[in-house]
Amino acid sequence: MKKLKSIEQVVQSGLCIGCGLCAVVAPEAWKLDTEGPMPLPIRIGDDAGRGISVCPAVHGTRTLSAESAATFPDLDQITRMGPIRTALVGHSLTSQRSLSSSGGMLTEYISEILDSGLVDAVIHVAPKAGGGFEYVKSKSSEEVRASCKTRYFPVDLHKLAEFVADESKVAIVANPCFTAAVRRLSQSSPESFGAIQHFVSFFCGHWKSKSWTEYLVACSKPSKGELIDYRTKIADRPASKYGYQVEVNQQVETSLMSDVPNGGWQFGLFKPLLCDFCDDVGAEMADVVFGDAWLKPESEDALGTSVVLVRSATALASLQSASAKGNVAFTELPIKRLLESQNATLRHRQDGIAARIAIRKIGRKFVPPVRVKPSLTPTRTNLVSLARYRLAKRSNIVWGESREVADSVSHFNKRLKFDYLLIRLASKIPTRRKI
Ligand SMILES: Cc1cc2nc3c(=O)[nH]c(=O)nc-3n(C[C@H](O)[C@H](O)[C@H](O)COP(=O)(O)OP(=O)(O)OC[C@H]3O[C@@H](n4cnc5c(N)ncnc54)[C@H](O)[C@@H]3O)c2cc1C
Ligand code: SF4
Ligand code: SF4
Image (cartoon, rainbow, N blue to C red):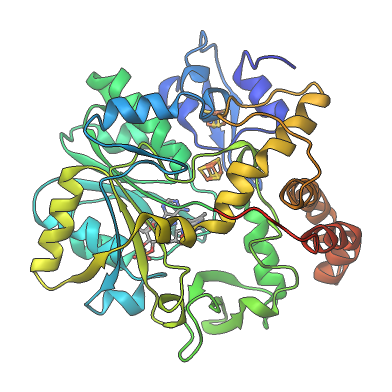
């Protein structure tokens, strides 16, 4: 398939990431169905091509370098991450640090921009009444602090127009592909979306379908209930060795991620297809980007440490203001160290993507436009990439049948035994390349 010409074709291709923006720009034509593993648009009328104009799967990342250079004209482009003003490493100095998933810098940041009046509202993710998570709009730092935490759950932006109506200065917290799409929307339709002026993002290894949440619950000690925390800090363990919490009959049970069979991020279980064709690691259209300091010695601290990639001068000033108030502490981080903190993602998303593009092209399937050329050179990175690509696709299918059987976790992992073996074998090939 050469080009995707309609939202139906995006959905058929499997590349829909469920952002809901087609339903935002053409609400008479599209409605978002949020019942399945991923949100998906359903046609309710004729959109005359408006929906597809905002779709991140169709747009891809090929024009991102030019777009980010135009958005941040005073900055140099740093290979692999887009424009950078400075990089920082640090953490919250308040009780926020223990409440947040990482170092708490993201929540301190959005609290600061609300308190300082840089924006009047922040669009961010919070628990949903009745279970799951959703985008909400908050107007106070108390509200954003109360709903901190990373949610590995497929949230969507179908309420975006409602959130920005009657607002003049709004910030949004979103993954890199939603950030780029919403920034484009605010630039191209200032009359409707120009109020969205500040873009806060995070390093995004990949997205997860709802099946990830079901799988974690099935792997937990109670094996049923509601997943309420994806990242529970465990005292005296390194930050990366976190747990998760499931609530059942008003009892909260903590399980360790290391006990989840094949639950490591390197396996990429329940990853949506688009993530395997996305090279935007640095959230290149965001004013500021937060992530985990997966660096030693910082990662040894159970309380969590944040890395921050700063683009706009306003973002740097807000961080300095939060520091002057004693809410955060940070130091400058050499760019090389920032790249090291995202090493695994960079390797899979910007190097290994070459093999995935090549395979998809051989299958004559649409490939979202990216900045990497196809390659099937049999390197370790390419072979691991292809093994993971196969597992990600199959995990979504196989869970569909496994979730219905009594011992769903064993059934699922037995059916994927060969896929895990391929990844383990490919990972044993010696590597020469380093960033
Ligand atoms: C799907 C996903 C993948 C990620 N992959 C990586 C990675 O590979 N490497 C890395 O360094 N960091 C990654 N992160 C970011 C990391 O997990 C932390 O969210 C980030 O470091 C901020 O931590 P904090 O303690 O400062 O944030 P907190 O104070 O805990 O606040 C988190 C904020 O993120 C928002 N949020 C939570 N879930 C979502 C969501 N699904 N979509 C949009 N906003 C959300 C909340 O509204 C809240 O404002 C990922 C996050 C997500 C959601
Ligand atoms: S990725 Fe977003 S814009 Fe594209 S089809 Fe899916 S919901 Fe619509
Ligand atoms: S990996 Fe890319 S496509 Fe997937 S959710 Fe993150 S930014 Fe979007």
